[in-house]
Image 1 (tube, helix red, strand yellow):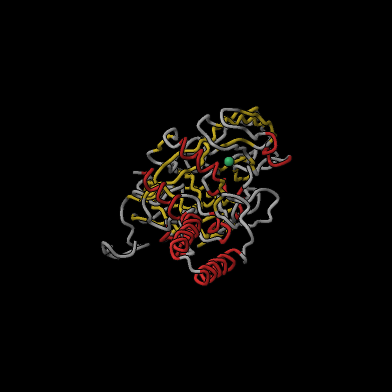
Image 2: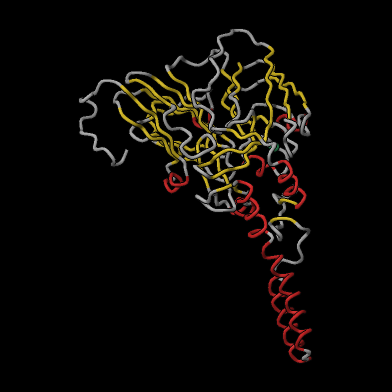
Length: 406
Ligand SMILES: [Cu+2]
């Protein structure tokens, strides 16, 4: 079924126009051969040429048999075009891609706090892998990942640690991948030393000089293309003195996906480079998919929580907000060594940046967290924190009307 949708998309939508153009020419030739009329020939050829010039003139000639046909970009490397070769390779490899049942990483998948008082050598291994999984029921995306889920595994080290990071690229991958960690001091954030072909590995060693919460991502050109396929995660560098203990720590990342079929279109979705360059995502989601953070985050009243929140981009700034709560402390831009802001409603998370928010809960109920640019909620940018416990009528007193609001 996936392959039928793919064929339809590739043949009908991508190259349909090109094919129609060729066959329009053939059709005209056949008609004219039958009619033997010089004037009719001249007229029809003129119309055909006129339409062709009208169509091609604004763009110039296509660079090759690629999608989109007329994409001109001015980045330091290749634009986000798909060559016919890549499309054919994708077809050839289609059955080899792993099908991941749930692409959304569990937000509870946070490494335990660092309790060491001395720096250490920390070894980390990550595997880049291209997989197929559901964005929404029946909507499939060819995700590119670190370790098969989105975001990639959270890495947790201590300020002053030396990190030896080995990046493997799974043999089923079709592309080169690498890793740029914003916590790294050095060229490319490690990307220049970790570019690996499918089936290969590379190691980079760096010292975590700066405490904070940092984004890591694939930085293989076209970088935006690799990131918006899902290639991002967070690395937490704890300050030497560590972080105060809380009852729950959660790992959440926002990201955008650009599907050529439009929102809700079923079947395998192909990447829409023009929508990405225009900054018009099809899906805006937490942890890689719609409804990815339902029934995953549970707390009791009186407990404390910290959310490590990152933004993989590639276009939008997130306005992160927890409906029905006020963040007690926010570490803007994840600067853990600055004084936190207190009593914050909504905080900005830049593309390629992160934030750390802390709060406690007093009243039971469902608390929805969103990108408060609220049109994005309909594209998937929401999750639910469930709080159980005794009612606290002094703080909140009201009947909860089922089916309305939150
Ligand atoms: Cu990559």
